[in-house]
Length: 168
Image (tube, rainbow, N blue to C red; front, side, top):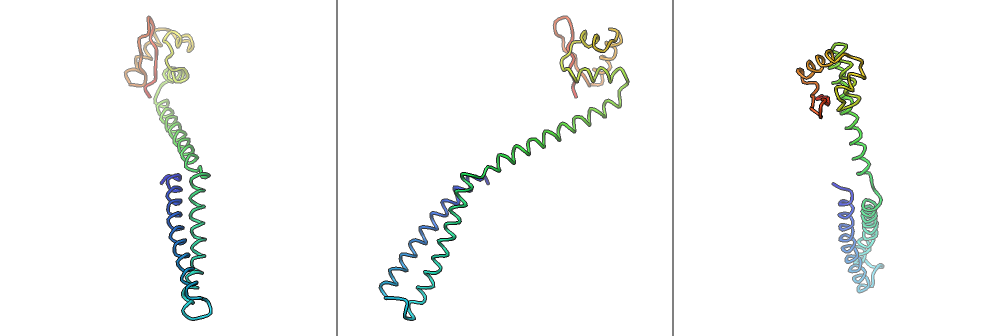
């Protein structure tokens, strides 16, 4: 349950319990005044009930204060969500890196160089990739075709050249 909702609920319960105890205490006080209490046997029950009402006021105060604290001061829910989100992102990144490493082990030297370069610069053009890797057009084209057949990259026509994106 959300801390704000819990805080509001505790405040409402605190008010209800407080009103109930206030009513009971005033009722007991009027009864004790009518009986002229405390020295005789009839008043012992009223005296015990009044003692209990003091404890009840303490409980009411605690519930009310806890409700206000949860409503106003406690912000752990937001912190927990942000920590959980960061952990999920880190876990996802680790899994992606592990997948990438496994795929890289299955590739030859030229394919590894191409995949690393495309991963570093997503959407790199084929001509820029050729210059960056210092490969011939034919060799690069052959390597890209093989990677595309395996479903590791996709080539998108962009003007006169092709942009290359990783599918993994």
